[in-house]
Image 1 (spheres, one colour):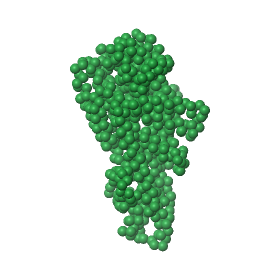
Image 2 (spheres, one colour):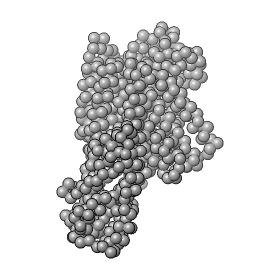
Image 3 (cartoon, one colour):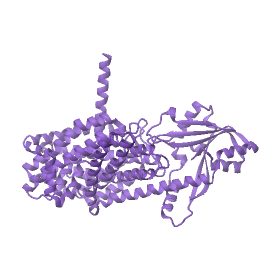
Image 4 (tube, one colour):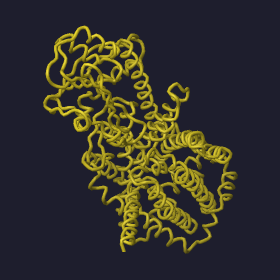
Length: 628
C-alpha cells in the first residue's frame, strides 16, 4: 500500500510539472500556429487556389521536419543533456564549456563572446515575441468583423502595457493558472485541427520530407523567403533548454512528445486541410479553422496564451540579466526578488522599461503581425546556432560522445541552423535590423564591461600590497587594536584591501578581528551551504573568507555572515563593521571610446553595499582612484 501511494504521489508530481512546463516553457512555440503557416504560404508567392494547395503541402512538410529536427532531435534529445547541475540555457552552456578550459586557453575569449552574443540575441527576441504574439491574437477580431481592424493596434498596446505593468508584482500568483490555461490551449489547438483533418486526410502526404524538398526545388526563387518564414514555427524551441532547471528534463520532454508536439502538428495540418478546401481562408487560417460558435472563446483563449507566452519571455530576460550580473558580463543592477520561495522569480525595473519601450515601438511601427514577421527570426536563429556550436564542443570533447557518430550529426544540425540564419538575414532591411541592432548594442556593452573589468582588476593588483607583506609589517609595527570585527570586502584574497590601508593610514587603528571577505561566482547554478564558505586563519587575528554562490543565486552577505557565525566566530552582529571600497576609475587614454563607456557604466552601477545587501548602518564606504 505504501509503495502504491508513493507511486501515485510520484505520478501526480510529474503531472504537475508537465502542466507547469506548458505554462512557462511552451508559450512561445505554442502560439506560433497563430501566424506561422499563413506567413509562410504568403511568402511562397501563392496567389490562386492551385498555387495555395501546392504551397500548403510543401510548407507543411518543411514545418513538420523543422519541428522534428530542430526542436525534437536537437533540443529535446541532445542539447537538454548538456545540463549544468540541472540548469540549462546559454549561460549554463557557456559556464560548462569555460569550466573545462584552461585559464590560459585561447578558446576562453571566443566562448565568452559566444555566450554574450547568445544572451544579447535573446534580448532581441524578448522584444519581438510579445509584439507579434499579442498582435496576431488581437487580429482575430477581424474575423468577427472587418470594421474592428482599426482597433487592433490600440487593443494590442493596452494589453502589452498592462502586461508590463504587472511584472513588478512577480508571477507567483499568476503562474498558478498559466499551466492549466496552456493545457486548454494545446488541447484546443489539437481539437480544432483534428475536426478539419477528418474531411481531408490526404493532407498527411505532407509528412514525406521529399514533398518539402521538391517544393523548394520548384520555387528556388523564393526559397529564402520560405525558409525565413518556416523558422517562425520553431521559435521558442530554445526555451525547452533554457527553462530546464524549473521543471527538469523528464517533464519537459514528456510535455513536448506527448502533448505539445502532437497538438501543434494537428493544428498545422488542420489549417492546411482547411486551405485545401477553402483557399480564401488564407486571410487568417487559424481563426477560420475554429467553428463559428467557438470563435469568441478562441479569441479570448488566444489572448491569454499570447500574454502567457510574452510573460515567459520577459521573465526569461530578467533571469538572463541576473545571471549576466553574477557572471560579470554586465555591471551590477538592481534586482528585485518577487518570491520568498522561488529564487528564479525576479524583477529588473530597467530591463522591464527597456523592453516595454521596444515592444511599443514595434507595434506602432509594424502595425500587423504579418509585417512584424519580417523582423522575426534573426535573433532566434542566431541564438540557436550558438547553442549548437557550444553543445557540440561540450558533448563531443568534454563528455566524450562518439566523434564518428555525433560530429556529423552536429554538422547537419549546424548546417540547418546556418540555412535558417542565412535566410533570415535577408530580412535585415525589412525590419530585421532592429533585433540585430539591439543585440549588437548589448554585445558592445558586455565586451566593454568584460574588458574594462579585467583591466581594472589588473590595475588593482599592480598597485596593491600583498597580504603577506602587510602582515609582516604588523610584526614590527603593531597599530592600536579596537574591539569589534571588521569585514573588508575584497576582490582578491591575496592582497591587502585599499579600504583597510586607508582606514589604517587615517585612523591609525585596526579592529580586534579582521575578516577579508571575497565573493566568487561559481560556474554552477547553485552552491550548497556546506560548500559556500572557505575559511583560512592568518596571523594577527586576520581571517580570509571566500564566499561562493552560483550564477543563479542571490548574493547576500548577511546570510554568509550568519553561516560564518555559526561555524567559526561567535560574534554579535551589532559589533560588525563592513568596509567597502568605492573607487573612482579614470582612464589613461582619453580618446578610447570603449573605455569612456566602461567608466560611465562603472560610475552608474549599483553600489556594492546595495548589491550585497549590507545594512547601511553597518557599512563604511572608503573611496580612492584607480587609473586604467
